[in-house]
Length: 256
Image (cartoon, rainbow, N blue to C red):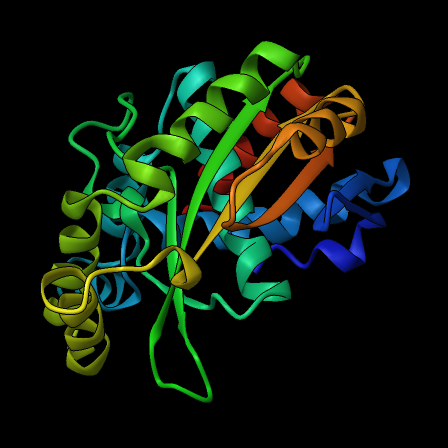
């Protein structure tokens, strides 16, 4: 996990009945954050089982090369990937949506963005046993704008606010392949039999920027008129680009 509580101060407020959180990275703790994230990054692109197998068969040097070939090299893709990783980690640390797959492991190319929803995660309702699905958009920008937030809102609203059938099938397939057959069955049932209801869906808007995101996120929630529960989170790191570069550079220098 990203361990946000160790390097960020959080400000929470309720806007239009929904939760909004702004995380401000503390400048004195940035180096610690870089170290934490550099250890998290490799597992987002390759499973521990895959890495362990390579270690046994080909050794540490081969593992380092394998991970290096997975990492994006362009600024824009690094920025987008890290935004998704941070958004997914936030869910695991602070919400009930702790289940999911590391979708970056299935990228077509390290310097290409993946199609579909940025973040998909799920949980299980403790009372009904129904699957709870989170559809998320992650936006990473040096300067977050209202236009970017509007684009994210449009993506969240697509398909009547629900994840696409393709996205749910992708998630179910990956769970099944990893031996999580019960979770795959829940997703399949929700998608193919009972259908996913709006009451089972939550939206996450996660932004990662150098500027203060509060005004844009607050305005977005104030204008939201739908029935789907919203979680809005803005992470502010003043030296946004330097932070991203430092994280990926440390992953490369660590070797594994």
